[in-house]
Amino acid sequence: MHPPFSSLVRSLRLPIASSTRNRLQIPLAAPLSARPCPSICRLPISIRLITASPHLPSPPPPSTPPFTTDRGPTSQEDTQTDFSTMNVLGSTPPPTTAIDACLDDGFHLDSGVKIGGGSGCLLVGGEAFGWRPWKALEGKGNDGGKMVNAMGQWQVGERAWGILEVVWPKPDLLILGLGPHTMPISPETRKFINNLGIRVDVQDTRNAAAQFNLLATERGMEAVAAALVPLGWKELTTTI
Image 1 (cartoon, rainbow, N blue to C red):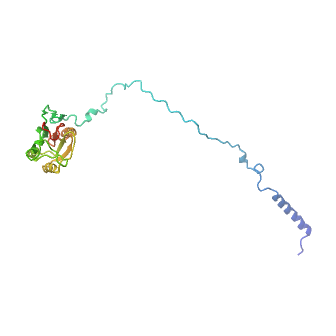
Image 2 (cartoon, one colour):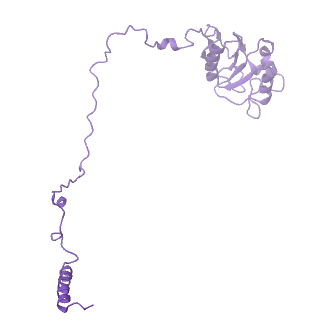
Image 3 (tube, helix red, strand yellow):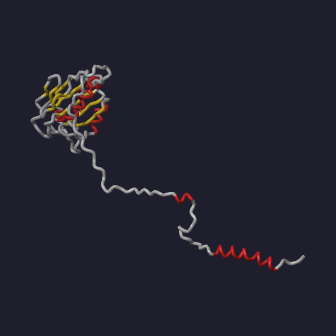
């Protein structure tokens, strides 16, 4: 086999060198204007700037009152709600022993009965009795008119509850009104009343009277009793 001619080898080297020289003359970082760009880059690009308003929107104007409050003619439909009929106790007559007024020296009942002279009242089974529980302590080394023991507790003798011992059926709840202010009752007094099968609720006289009026209307006068001390009662006084 004969080697190739030198002229043929020289002619083949010239195109390769020229193509290599042309590639080396292209700069690596050509400017954007010199770089070829596809046809899509030639379309105009619109840029929208969103800026915040330097001022807040003004508040809406205040509403004006209506020119008239007339709601038109009264509806004759039966579907309207009559709120007066929603009072479940509206048709229930109040108890005859309901407290109408609490005074310094007595009480006025809804039936027109007035208890005065500094007496309290004991309301049991629809009946009202004058009640002076401080008298039950006299004759036992206790000054008349004192119902607060050395511990600051309200305490009276067993003779003050004579009516509760004989009444039948006995009330389920006894509401105690201890004058202008409330105070705890002694364990002996609470135990004696509880042994009769009666629960005790202690309040001041005003709140006790209001609670008795409500519960006696709801549950009946036989289920609730009240023992109220007048508002003007004070310790160690001889006028009451």
